[in-house]
Length: 243
Length: 184
Image 1: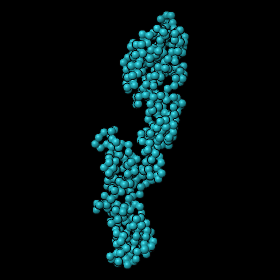
Image 2: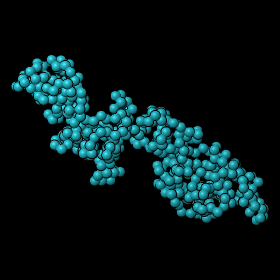
Image 3: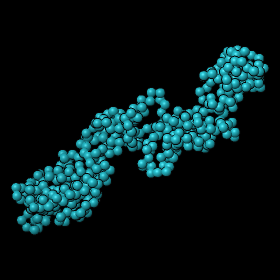
Image 4: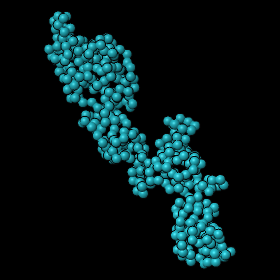
């Protein structure tokens, strides 16, 4: 199951009355229309483009949160690999598709075999790499990150990394695509989006309520949580029926 | 059973890491490279230990052909010096070599043999020395076969089999594991 962006946007839109329509039938029709356009979802306070930017911001915060937790199961939704990194090479800031890396680094693996490397002191790595008398015959899979460079004992390695690109996500929304987050995060995403909708003194009460829920969930996520209590009002579900 | 260096190292690592505690907390869990560093030492010590077992010692001996010129040849690196007292020599062309030879561990005694009618061989540094019966040192020319406890050839590829007995392999594994746990 995946989480369509338009599901998040329109469920939040309900809370700020930005579903377009003057009758119940028109509202229902607009609510169910996919892909969304400003004909169905928009208001003078929050246009659809603003809502799209806001949902990308919220999804970005969610991904950055769990991407910063080593071995967090949700990282699987955003994992990819860097380009090859040679011994003493600079760790790139993007993956091999030039998407920016977020969160902590994952496994360091041999670029050819996929074998994981383990961490060893740089001095040990140097003795293995030097091996001037060719004494060592074994295959050694060691690495050490030193600042922004990677010392290792292989020809090339790749790093598993989480990535996030706001511009890529806006393109995904335009293509009626899915948010790269697990189902367990849909309530959090909707709540986070509602929390962003504040104009002067409008919507502040619900923004605070959803904002508290959103920040509390991110805090739990940062501690490794993978399941969360439902949002303050259950307009969404962790197993959404709306798609 | 054929054993490769890789197999021996892997077993030693498991023994050293998993015996008596949580391997996740073992301080030696990621030390394969150290086992390779110690491999030859452990193998050699395992062979020396085996050489003290009467039923094993002959199986640990290998035949080396040494070209001797003016009574001096080069001792092969693989010969285990500590076990030369159990060695023997022979020649396919000179029967005196086999019939009358005796290893002389002391170089001075080799130079001044008690019984001149015997052949003697000795080792000095990496030199193999031989003098025939009733012959001065530094005279003999020819090939001599030295049958001595030796380390086997270590294949260039770590996964290739090494020619050793099961007893030697098992002893090497135990020694490597002990070394890794700081008991070597």
